[in-house]
Image 1 (spheres, helix red, strand yellow):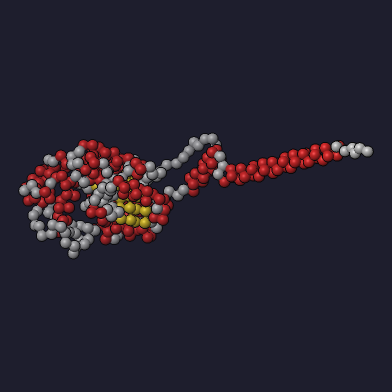
Image 2 (cartoon, helix red, strand yellow):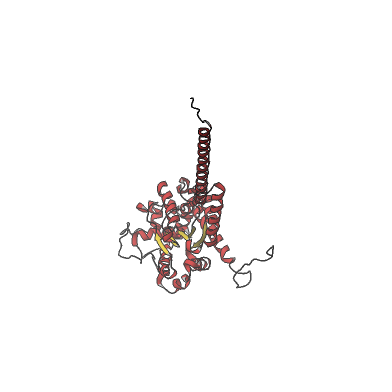
Length: 350
């Protein structure tokens, strides 16, 4: 008797097993694909592709533009020239800062150097640009003009300054070193006890009255370039003029301090609101007057004014005076005591 095997049943089982494996594989791939898609979308929401990031960046930039407060981010730098009345003006700012809610900071450079080293230039422009807690602010110090755009800053501060007749500034500084001033009358100055007059100094051709010492206002407006500090350099004068017009919001005259303050108050009320009234009705207009000062005689004046340095420094002063008087004149409507105004009209589309 022979046994016959039924091969049909095992074949069916094998086929069923294969189909089950295929089904499981398909289902697994489906689940895996779904999870990958979910992960991709999630990742896209957080980071996005290039176009999404650009869109989000533009939206954020637009939002910041719409909410940017120029007054609350205002930075003013007063790179004050020595012996131009700067102490009176700075103390006015210190009096106003609490009332007007702004900060005043003194820039103290080692050894009273007027030029910052390159590392300090970079650090300085980055520091005050990003120092949000100190905005709005007025920075002041005996420092040459520094161009913020040179170091890639997104915004530039407003520069202001005062300029004085060069011979008057030199004579004032000469006697200041000998007799001091009424601001700190008990402080002994470097040349205390020296009774030589400025006229005698010029006659004897001493170093303390060398016309080259007048070469200071040009460098302060010219900046940190080497040529700025070479007495009599024509390029320095040209650069100082360019900076005065293009980089300074306002340059006033020591001899017209009240007008300078008045124009500042009208232009930058966020910091200088009430400054003219305070200046006129307090003792701030009489700070740091040299205790003893003798005006030079005509012969001395002629000798000084014959020097190339005086001629160039005086050219900058006259140039600054022209700009200042022009700004004063344009404050009002010609022939009328009415402040100039402006408006927008003919706006299209309606």
